[in-house]
Amino acid sequence: MLGLTALLLHLIVTKMKKYSLLLFILPFLQCTTTAPEAGQLHEEHETAIKVSYRTPEIDSTRLNVAFLIMDGVYNTELTAPYDIFQHTIFRDSIQSMNTFLVANTLNPITSFEGIRMLPDYDYTKDDLPRIDVLVVPSAEHHLDTDLEDEAMIAFVQRADKEAQYITSHCDGAFVLAKAGLLNEVVSTTFPSDIDRMRDMFPDLDIRKDVLFVHDGKYITSAGGAKSFEAALYLAELLYGAPIARRLAKGLVIDWDLTEVPHLVIEEKVSMD
Image (cartoon, rainbow, N blue to C red; front, side):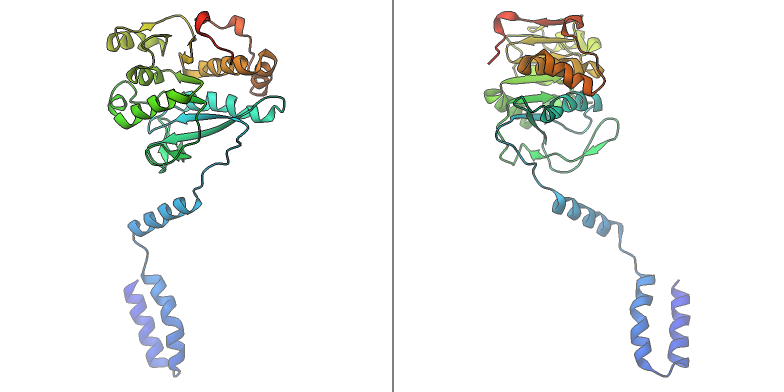
């Protein structure tokens, strides 16, 4: 490319009489020989992300539902409850939900399956809206390194002080346990991880053979595709069975709570 450029310059200088033509063509030749470095492209991409970022609009008349995400979050445990709760905005007769993502960064988060998403709030820096419901989906390292994240555990503990409900899906229960939220309640988790959770937290009451457990303000779910059931249960608790069935129908789900294996600790359930 540089040899071709030199040849063109020679021809222009020796054959053309008007110097102004050389001034006109030189910028175009420079464009053909100079390309932005990879680092520069990355910087421009990051700048574009920051420029386009903005916090979501929060309707003060709605319940605020925060989803705690980090790299390695599993798609289903995030999107199943998100779909149920976000779809409440299409039901005019109820107090619907604002749904938003919180993380320890505003940079893109990559799910275990490879989907990239942008958090709405950085819980280490931003002033978050009031959290009425905290959802803790499972993530790849919820059984090990994530439990050593003191800032994340502290955020869950802070959210617990004001939230009406705390829900977990699959191994999200390990985060709640590490935060000390399950010390006095019955809970469950992903079926094949129940024994491991019992070994890690031997003082907890962890149940098998149920898809979710509701004890007090805490709803813990087996996760996977059954995350829909735990989310629909909370929708039914808040809005009644007809609304829950309509939410389910919109996602082509047959919903009948009586057919779902679950456990409710009756004396601690509040309908307020």
